[in-house]
Length: 133
Image (cartoon, rainbow, N blue to C red; front, side, top):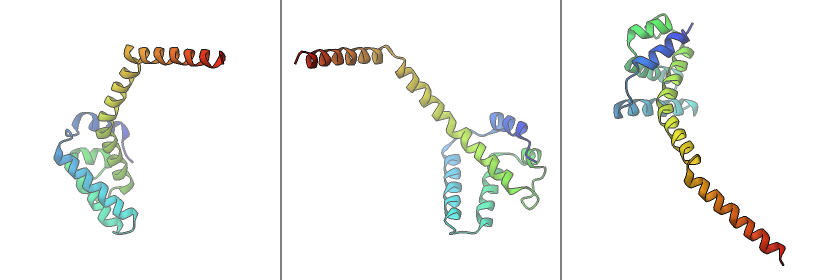
């Protein structure tokens, strides 16, 4: 059974930085998974690609810790997919979290408040103009 506590520790501390090579590796995996979803390739090809990516991103020792084995024929393939899903989410969340932070700063900025005040004043003028007709 997948050790999710260890998974979080490994992903947080041992995952390599997202370089161009890692990005290309993940893109290749996603492309293979899309082909599998369209029934263009067999499950084994997809599973072997997932295993390849996993072994390139996480050490064999850590794979044994997470899955109980480093043999693709002995591990639960669903757990391999779950680990990769966590890895993808971890890589993608870095930029997403930064975007959220930047957007929230914009929303809280005084410039935005000024724009809202101008819009409110314009609405008041429009309303007053419509009422006087």
